[in-house]
Length: 219
Length: 420
Image (spheres, one colour):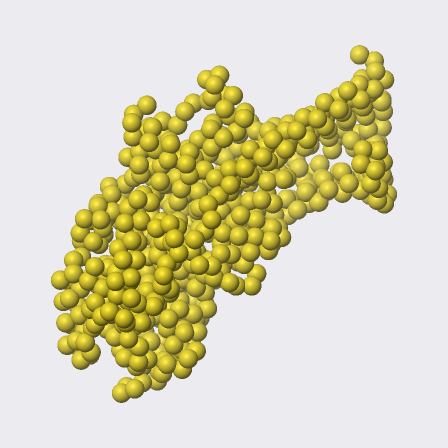
């Protein structure tokens, strides 16, 4: 297929399919999960400040006492690549333009050089995360095909985006088309892989914080 | 599929709720929960990673409650959970989990892992995959009235001993008393000082209290083995006793899981809130302290440290009370590293101390407590759970340590102002 045709397809039909699966799939998964409900706790609650679901939604982003030194790489690398992904996805001028077309909302972006540097750091950190998954006994033991697939689905859009932005490896049009395709794969698979945690972790933290907050324990 | 496995799977299906679905969907296999689990940190074996212990429950969730899982099941692509698998998981769900809940505090996506272990045990027990030690304890609790087989005459013998030692009559079945005091079997058999201490403190505080002949035992093997029907019977006994005696408050003893069973699970087991209040003995004593009803004299000279029982602190919310109380009588009170809600388990909670085949692993896991203790340089260890106490004593004996372990209540009673 001709690169221009390919680009046109991923920008129209491909994008529509991917967004369709992403939106419907995510909604389906969230309904599937949260419609199960839970029983009301009949024990009389103990009130203590800081003990609630809402607190835990934020508090859990910080390592609990003693945990950082036990697994420093997990925490540092975790912060770096999540923040890196956020910057690249939401603060790159081209992405903001696309999101504006889709949603009508717009906000200021960061200079391209900064985004490029962030992409390099993010890619390097993700490689480190992969190396840890392969080398650390616990992570290797827990890992399934889904974990490696989830990693690849996240890594490829950053890699192809960086290569396209720097005009490396392939002609720009072809690399851009590959970049958009990789994002579409990420969107389409997200609801059905562990990547759904981007949505469900908020619910999980809330439930945990709420149940323990009932007992007066800020978790 | 055997009938018992069938029952086990349907119980697991019933157990799965929105929190569990959210937790399994959120797990990214980061493995940080392993770093919070003493069975992993002390052995280095990845199979003790907390989230891995839940694999059978996760499979049931996926196959029954997700679209893709159901399609996979219909097409015969997924393997159903089998008896062999549950049996293989028995040492992970019981022997190597004290339900201490430390993993639930560290999971970055917020999964309450111990909540799920508690639920998985329901399916394990009903399908016949619970350890012998816990089956025995639960049977004795239902049939005899206590997991250790203690009957009322043993309690009455204790009452007579206390009377002989202190001159104080222990009230039994006193209708209309303010407090109904419960004990754990361990306190009746191994730590009689508890009852004597209560008698002295209640006398000084001028409070009316009673034991109940039908409900003196606070522990609940039902929640440890994971059979809510048994847990309910045991809680109901206490509810009936408290209602018959028309007490205002039921006091949970120096025992961790009894507090969880009675204070937090109990109303949910019996299906309604209680008509009385449940307090842990440390909450009662700290209340006496703030009201000026607890008068002490003198201090413990030796350096003291406190071991936080998981079910009381991390899982129960009683943090400050033991510290407030110990500071009344301790000159040199030191905290361990990772104290309060981040404390490490003694290794014998959640029924583990009743599982004979788990002893070697439990002693291995005790190394974390040993390290914590040695670092404090404490000469006496105070705790507020008879089970922690006996498990720690056994651990110290194994590692040839000699630090006395005592309860908070008896430590306070030692320092009560005489004649008040």
